[in-house]
Image (cartoon, rainbow, N blue to C red; front, side, top):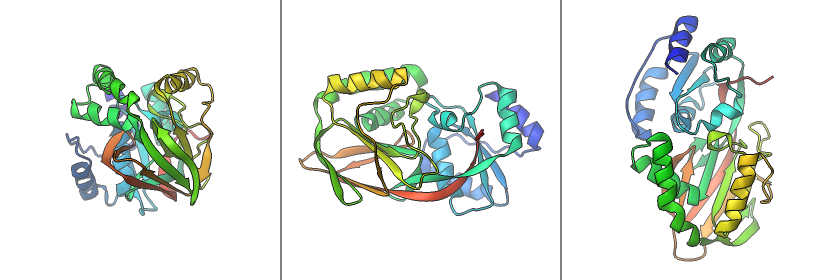
Length: 272
């Protein structure tokens, strides 16, 4: 990552701005104060860092975002087909092939993917423990295993149609098939389709485990894909539902809405 940063600065004659924060609001304020006047902004961080940049870049039609993956999950790197070799990654950034991407809006926060239920619990606990990469993720998963046996009862609507009513372990919605580490949790999702892709994983725990095995093996999950421009989620019991966006916990409450934002940002990738 350090070599990619150094070589990118040299190749693009780029300025370097550095901050140290895990607070999305603080990062957004910091980035807003520095991004004006640039035609290209290369973000170095994880999916959450890039997610903050989407929200700052939205509406700036002449601005293209590049990405040097430096997080743990790096789901977006798989969508953009970014090479791991630093010099090859620099070649992609220098070529500057930027495409407009559709995003999902959660409480007006833009992201490539969002998740409700169990994975949001894991994301919140991972961040709360200091985001210590694989050890921290393993601890967050272990602490969240008992929650697999406490499924919420929910109703899910896609463009006003009820598509699920009953228990839920996990709901994923977005415009990318990838979750962290390249897992295809939502295959068929595309950032240029003009619609969201929704999947509901009802569980119980052993069935989610089977689905997770299919993600790891690159097989299509049993949960069906539903295309929609708006998805509404609400509990039918007393429990609140946690939601994460691009790996960052957004909050927890009884009702949520997710909406498509077509062609929201321009992002550099290897598209051919």
